[in-house]
Structures are given as structure tokens and as C-alpha cells.
Image (tube, rainbow, N blue to C red; front, side):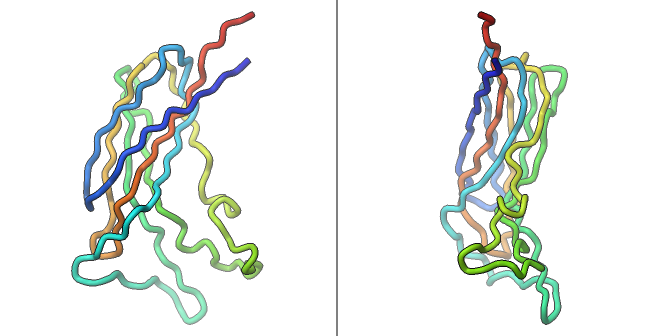
Length: 164
């Protein structure tokens, strides 16, 4: 029987360009790390210095906007693998409804209906390390709207199960 566990590490980002170190404690009975997932939840809109940001690139019918990057993180184990994972976190998909004329008021396009947010990224790392160090760097553009937000890092592990 396979038994999985998720380890949640959450911290607040309160300044543009903030660098946050964190640690993920892996249980001693972990067989391997099977996946890593990340998300952000916006809390408060901070005032933008010197005015707001510009619009997107486009024409009369289509407006393409860049997806807002919130930050990037790296995870590093103390073993031989060293850096085991690095990823960029986006707040949302700014162009999710582009070319989708089937959207209605009752069923607007959302992140999960358009496969923008995967559930987890596979990371096949053995469970020999009991502590993983991480660093998160906020990458918000201070000219555009910026937010204070919570960052969540989810590490999925497979646990040893005793045979009966």
C-alpha cells in the first residue's frame, strides 16, 4: 500500500524584491519526494510608486497581456543532488479568455478548466535528506500593481509502509 503525505510551508511576502529563506522538514520515514507544488494568495494591494502600469500588446480585437510573475523559488537538499527543484510562480493567467468565445456568465474560463495550474510537478528525489533548504525571491515589477501575499510551497512525499 502506498502512503503519501504533503508538507506545507507558508510565509508572507510584504515588500517588493523581498528574499525569504525557508526550510522544509522531511519526515524520517519518507521513502522519496514525489512532487512539488506552489501557489500564492494575494492579500493587500500595495500602492504603485509613480503611477500604474501600462496595458498589453494588441489590436482592436485582441489584447495580449503578460502573465504577472510573483516570484521564483529554489529548493536545495543537503545530499549529493544539491538543487532539486526551481520554479517561477505566477499569480494568474492574464489571457485565459483569449479566443474562447464559449465563455458565458455562468461558466467563465478559470485556471483549472484551461489546464493553466498543474496539480504538482514530478520530482523523483530519494528521501535520504531530512531537511530541504529553500529560497524565495519576489519578482514583482514595482511600476505595476504590487501585492503583499502569502506563498505556499507543497512538498509531496511517499512514506515507507510496513508490510503486513
